[in-house]
Length: 263
Image (cartoon, rainbow, N blue to C red; front, side, top):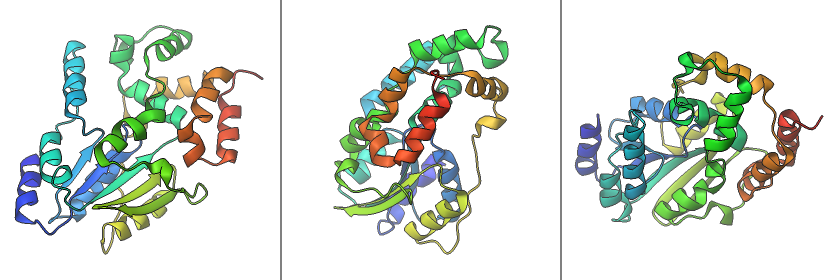
């Protein structure tokens, strides 16, 4: 499939490439594969980073821990043929509540963080919380727009007002058109936004990579039901520039109450 996308960059130079460019664990695969079914003459790619050095390090880390790296996106090609040439293109970028995203990322790379597969895990939820606390990069979602998105696009999303209530924003700067979407919006709204943004007559989301269908589903569910977090940790996430820019005060209060261990 990647060979076809490479070919499209040359055969259809007037068609704007589309990047589903997001941090991991925000529902981006569902958007990417659903778009691929509808767009034939557009090169479309799914990326979490366009930093070639970081991607190589990530792949090496996966192999060192005997975990197969999931992404095969040709980042070098995207940088060479789209970014560096300042070619007009579109970005669909989703974001997610930082704590929900962190928990999802932890379970998605369960073996990397705990040293064992979910089905083989036989210790307590308390111990699992220790693995979460000690091994996860908790500030990753807070810094992603600064460290990854800005570095690749030169767009500082924090310079633009975001309507937290509606949960999405569309902006154009230079050669780039950007659709920012809160992943918690219902599918009907997301479908309409993506349909119009990508100039489609119709668009339907087909969900993929759902946590509920993974081998860690039950363990993940129990972890979220029983685990609580300190005020310091919740303040770190929800008093961040990221959370304050994208989420309403009501959402932040509700999340802090939901996950707080101070009751």
